[in-house]
Length: 376
Image 1 (cartoon, one colour):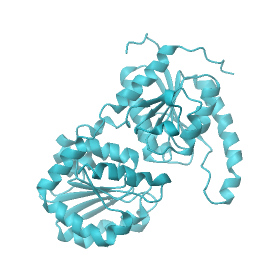
Image 2 (cartoon, helix red, strand yellow):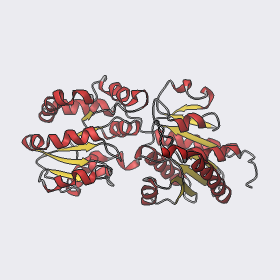
Image 3 (cartoon, one colour):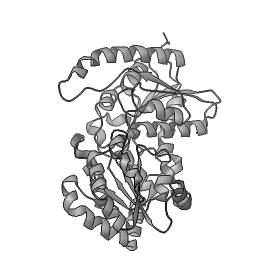
Image 4 (tube, helix red, strand yellow):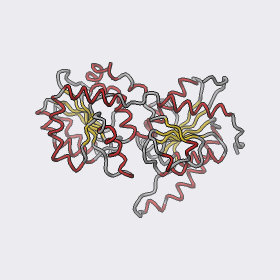
């Protein structure tokens, strides 16, 4: 699209987990590519991981005092009304000072107050929903924003149909070329080039059951002549870091060079969150999905099953790990034909243009040139 020369300002809000942060960063990166002079500001929850990860990606971020409502009655819920009021007031100050042309939300607690303020002022706004079952924040915002970019069909039951755009999930550009980074990836993690590498991903916070599985099978992996890059999550790192003394295992709380980790991997074990599935389709490596059963509408199992049913991944439910895992993994790690088959099939499911499609929708909002309410 050809937009008139102007220094645009964008606010992006999304966080709590990597699944909300990295889509926002990917959108910002593409906007920056198209509008090099644009100004960007991220808004996140002041005590969550976005306060570290967004500056690492090269963007400024402001924090809000906000958190979600606990499902059970807890003392933390008593503070929620005060946090919400504080975050709404803080969001108003941020919006008034920064004067954004468009505000973009990718989910997470902080995006609620920020997008609420922006939409109430008539500022063009867009949310990106990664999952087949939206979180509470995006459900509430769907009625207020201009555009809703989704990755799955059938979300009309949650959002106004006329606002929905099927785009897919935004993926970091550095993942598009991992096929050509195999040697670089192995070297970056000091791995042996004559051994298979297993990459274990439990999400940014970690996955308790996957961590238990990997710990219980360390000697099994060694017997299979497999080296393990184990991302256990920051909540579990202190518990499992003792295994860093082993020759075939390296433990990481978080992986900052995901492109090289993916490149180094021969087989990947992962949860089945929406962004993880989208990334793994792009990466095109053999995957064993172990979906979390503790999410709304069991959407991770649905995500994983939709891939496994196309012979593009292996699905093992948590309750079946003790009986099925070693047999499934040992067969896969020695079967090069099966590995190649899974790789080809999962790569065929990739939506590589999702980030561009979302930014196209942002630019449509810029072109409308609406008359905003005054910044007061």
